[in-house]
Image (cartoon, rainbow, N blue to C red; front, side, top):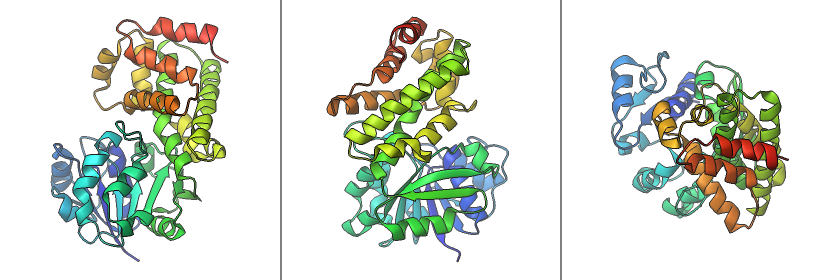
Length: 333
């Protein structure tokens, strides 16, 4: 049955999600976060998001909305695909316009940097009580460009509400998109939140021309730290070994197009963080993610030496390569 769906966020992932939903014969209203209406204008004029997902003709079922109230009006499912740092503002602005029985889907994958709350908890804080049970999170190895090309993509979908999970699956699952249910919201969110931080280190390997031996060792360390964080935060350690954990980590770390990997590659070539960010030219969520990771680890008194090394590389005022090499030589386990 055709449904009316809203996608908040018209970046590459938001547009790819809208493309999947429209391809499943649903009406999709897409809105972009405040201050960046260019992709909406491009979709309206050219049926293409030239800024964030060029080369894909978008079907007429994707309707750009400059006004968030218009995008949300009557929507049965609302997908949040804005940067995690913008989520608090977006949901506080959107909450009053959300349909009373809508299902709310977090695709942003992150932790609110000021409060260290998981994004589903940020959403729950602002919506009316009847909607809090309808919050769902999706996380896993999903490169937007590959999903837009209809390449097979599998992710975890997490909620305590099986009915909400079923509704999201009914609008999103098809021949090339699979969603695997779990009730471990904490594990799925933490796995999705911090893979970007560790991906920076894998990118540094590329900048230093280090091979798969080194990358495999680093990814093993990353997975160990993620699993421990999930456990101490109250999630299921096993989730680290599912799609939202190892799947997302490997998919992002080995993707040539990953902004976090590219950023790390520039660090590995000797650039400072400021210089690397300019080269990438888009948001690199791993930078803020590694700071959040360290604060969360301190909160739970959990050692994360690998993440600490990445943070030192990101914060270095000069060539960070010696920090990385010292870690490989002295502390990599």
